Length: 164
Image (cartoon, rainbow, N blue to C red; front, side, top):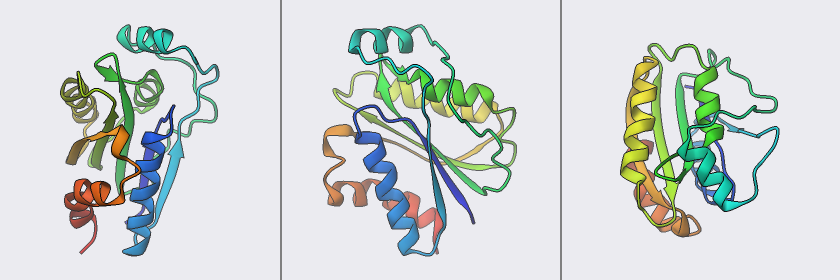
């Protein structure tokens, strides 16, 4: 089953988790594409990032491919900013017309943990509204994404779902 890991990463924590997951899938014989969301104008100031997230801005993405037909399993990931998902992931999700009958997973990375549960529920809700069947959902400490043992433990249930 071809898999896509669609993510936005600003500091590298989410990218590290997505890359780890791709490598674990490859070891089990599952092909996975990393789809790294890029903003046309990336905001660097932390306060501005939080403000854009809080007000649910949907900035323009560069080179985004919304055709996910070739994938049987989709994973969506983002940091938590201002108790919600990043504007980049929000924009991408807005560009997808349907995820009807698609298996999906989601994982978010967080710094303080504040709002991470709310952000994850919001992401799950958007995926369900688009028709996805959520098979896995998890919050990850961004500070611990360098720890492979931590990532192995957190992703074990997901890997068991995808691979025999």
